[in-house]
Image (tube, rainbow, N blue to C red; front, side):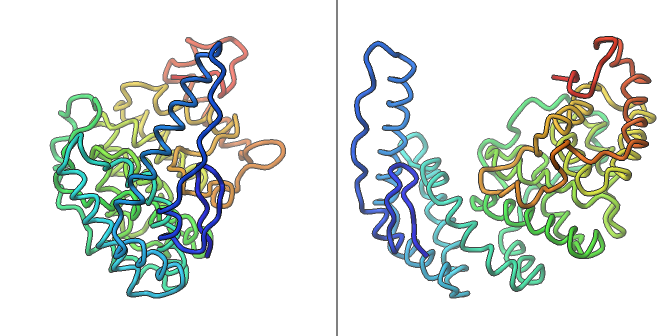
Length: 343
């Protein structure tokens, strides 16, 4: 497998050779265009950070990634262990470290290393990997109805979370979609949903938080209280996470997702109707749910066609009724559409 430099496009046979090369300098931006100057400076800084990260990465990490991408199973475990070690060391350095640089350079490479094994060996293999890096963070659903409004990172120091969580949340979410499409919801292990649910409280790294919202593909699971959990999260002011999970759920089963939306409003626990219902406009506009850059949404989320999302007319009518009944329609134009619902 070749590796392509994301900055200059040059290709290399091994990750080790990629990390040692230097990109050619950008042509200087025109002095009379400040915006272009700033863009050029950002590109330069990103390129310099990537160079430092690749040079600071040990052979143990880069060799393990190369071997994993060639099909060596033991190398996958070694790559995860080495990546976790690198991130942990960079995190302890604080502002002097290259934590987010390592994160950006190696996130996609690690996902590419795990994906072939996940596809071939399935959930038993992936669940063993998740178990090794399962979060220690805990939460008490019984207190969520009295929770203060969600205001950003609640565990900015990463306490209780593995540093490789962004990789594992990405591959788990993608496998969730593939499983639902191939085998239905019964093919999804309840443990996989339990794992993704761990990230509904922002751990300080937005990537696992965002990709964990693929939890929505578990709607209707017979062995996991999906609908009850979403209700608890909405009641506890975690509507940002819950709304995107519902958006994923619309792609999985629009009828069941509509049942859930109706139940949330009927329970009187939705504090911000637009936060839940703006996803209808996103879907109508042809947007896929928010995910990290390593999701391949065009392949995984195929509900869109030339005329847009394939709504069941009855579902669309039910959702329009929710918009009216909750009072949100009064804030919109007389001839409003879902796309008029914005945050």
